Image (cartoon, rainbow, N blue to C red):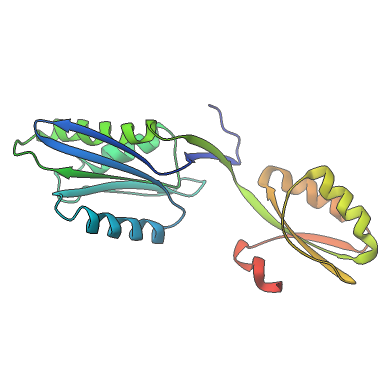
Length: 211
């Protein structure tokens, strides 16, 4: 699957996988996430639920640019757990995803090669049991315009068909749109040609400031 510059892959929903080797049981959980706060909360919940497990190893990747990532061995030999899990995120080119593999020790040491295989296979299993989806990187565009420009603005919105997330109509009107990044420039250019109207991209955290 070839992705465009404003696309990225993740899982649609939580997914699970498992693997067994010489008595040890490995349970893998894949979670779509958007922040390190999400990850911290999930890890805490899993440690409470599976408090009797020997290891909670994990890896995650965050952001459409895929630049934030981490792998944790949680007491397993160095690079025998977290790194193989991360390797599956890289192999499937997934981001905004956390994979946790919980191990119950079966009494027989597996050795580093055995551990690498177990954690890699568990993570792979969780991914393949899930539904991979493609998401787009979106901008938030704010349009401010005079009420008399309403028809022209709405015609452009109808043609471009972005997601409307906020609207306020008065003599001075405001609309916020969620626009696929590759289409933002075209929308801004069209709005700039409308008299008594202006449009700019805005920080998503500022969306509700004018509500």
